[in-house]
Image 1 (cartoon, rainbow, N blue to C red):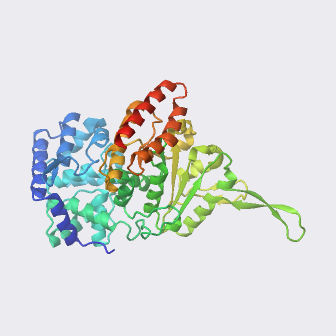
Image 2: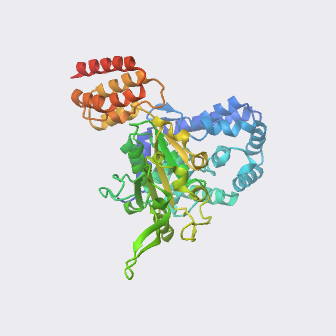
Image 3: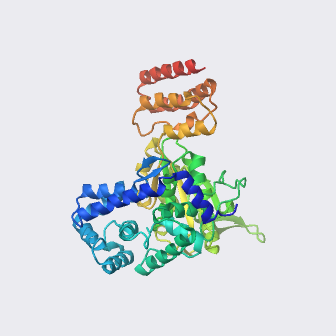
Length: 496
């Protein structure tokens, strides 16, 4: 499907956001300017939090929202920026001061040397420039640079004042050509960015119906979110975490029934540039370094008939070679049930090489130099019912992003809506079990109840899956399980 044009996307965005789209954003920006004028460089942490809310305030279809740039300017983001309050206030005095030249110089210095302003990143700096003059400056975030790139073909960086200047010049030219107001440029560029995902050197999605080894082919992060019934912002955060910095691997962890393998496989289908670039392996207690990296394997000498030993590459080394031979492509390895193997033994020197891509180590059997290419991602799954994440070797754990998946009634509710089921019986059963298990870290997940919406299917899910699982979890509390069994069967009896 061709990428929609700016004209098409602009019309769609305006229709979705409604007539108050631009005015509501302009009002929020004016409130932010008044706040900066009242407290230039003298704000408390609470006032910065309020300022962040103003940056994020807008309306969608007449409903006030606080998510224009979220998670930028909210939660952990703004709290991290205000950890050094005096330093931040000093920067705000320059950014909001009378000299635009000084403000732009500070932006360039911080973009070039991020440690100059703790936790600020490019979004806060360029938001201040945008508020100074929205007709000339734009907000520099991944979505806006990616969206403008989809239009101009230019790759925009956030590493110097010159990079920001180039972005602003091209942004203004694009806005003037299509009549885009300053207040809507970020929304339109974000939509263009999402529509264009998969082009050029971005990961290209497999064609629908291809399947591949992942069992699913969602093309964008929005498609992954729909397939997994998650918020697209969550998926975007996962993708950003795997795309930025040196950690190119992650662990999906959570109790049984939270969809870890399902989610990992669909995210892999989105990230890989082809279904053929995804590998799926399940670890088990006998899985070894020799299976994963390389090892000696017996061979029969055809001439003498005697037994010899040859070095054979394992699954991971083979995939690394494929990825290294195709640097413009992206490969993904999905490791299911990762905790079932002796991870320290299986990974060996890969603990170092996973973190420092491009650095070499000499392999013990072949004595050849080996490195993990940057275009190979690793997604693992771990079951926290046995506290597996806590028991994993810390040297390995700290080299993986940890993506948590919890029992989630909202995921179950969305799944039911996608099936056109109007009954809330599965959600009521989920709530009953969740309330009984309370905050136990091994609480059974929502996917147990993703069955045909009839009482008989739910009874089977309870009898043959959830009840046996809870019997192990509550082996010392049989009365508690018996009471829950009675309540569940009573509820399902009412729904039959």
